Each structure stands twice: as structure tokens, then as C-alpha cells.
Image 1 (cartoon, rainbow, N blue to C red):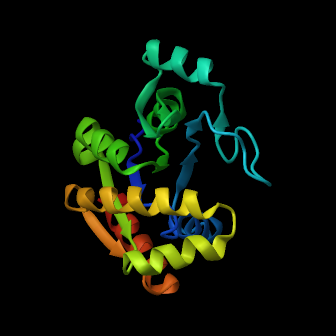
Image 2 (cartoon, rainbow, N blue to C red):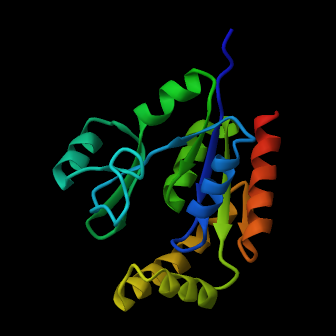
Amino acid sequence: MNTKGKLIIISAPSGCGKSTIIGDIMDRGQLDLQFSVSATNRKPREGEIDGVSYHFLSDQQFKDLIAEGAFVEYEQVYPGRFYGTLRSEIQNRVNEGHNVILDIDVKGGVNVKKQFGDDAISIFIAPPSISELKWRLKKRGSESDADIEQRVGRAEFELQFRNDYDHVVVNDTLPEAIAEVESLMAAFIGK
């Protein structure tokens, strides 16, 4: 008999190291994990690949999928900018016994946790401070000052949801944050 897999929800404001942490844990391969690829209607950044980085959809495609109920969660994160998790991305994998990582926005994470309850763990990755977050976003060099200000404003809003998560990991020192997240995942999968 096949045991159902579990969901691992990881959320963070932009620039908190979430993708780096997830990537490092996945690359090491110590845990049975599969990555859920989110959908978005934004344009790909340099180096991003459709179906690997995100499912890049047109505005109309995204709206049609919302109408069809194809998302387990979705959110308009910025005006006109949608992100979501396709139900098909997680259903088959979990039913086959795989543990699935969801790298999703903060409100989406809260919604998925409510839907899946004890079959999911939710981990919020927080910056050490807003000023450190702003510095990290500038260092990334992929956004304008106006975009950075918008992201910082969004981060201040998203930080209000941290207490709705099972665990909060402050990414002050990256290796320590990676170890803490991996330890939380391993304990949850082992249940």
C-alpha cells in the first residue's frame, strides 16, 4: 500500500533567501522531496525556464485556470501580477507517496496549510531586519529602485502573517537557516 506524501510549505518575502535555501536542500538530496512549480503571469527573468522555474502563463490563461478551479491557491501579489499553485502539480505526486515542497507567497501558504492541515508543515523565512532585506534586494541588481521599494512595502505586509505559520526561521546566516529548515523538514517527513 502506498503512503501519501506530505506537503512542505515555504514562504518568505522577496529577497529573504527562500529559493537559495530550497535549492541547497534539494541539491543535497538527503530528503525525498519534489519541487512544485508555481504558475505566474509575469514575464520570465533571464535564465528562467518555463515549466522549471515557473509555469509562465498569459493573463488570460491564468484567469481561465482560476475560473476552472485549477489552483489549490493563487494570489494577486502585486497589481496585475498573479502567482498560484496548480492542483495538478501536487495531487499526483502526493498520491504517489512523494513529499512536495511548495514555494509560495505568504497568504497562499496560509490558505494551503488550512486545506491540508496535519498533512502539511508551513515554514516562514524572515529577514533579520527590513534594512537588511532592502540591502539584499539592491545587491541582487535585478529590479529598479521603485520595484525594490514596492517589494519592501510588500515584505512589511507579509511579515504580519509569520505567526500563522508552524515555524519561523530568520535567515541571518544562510548556512544556519538552511540547516534549521532542513531539520524541520526531516522531522516532519519522519512522522
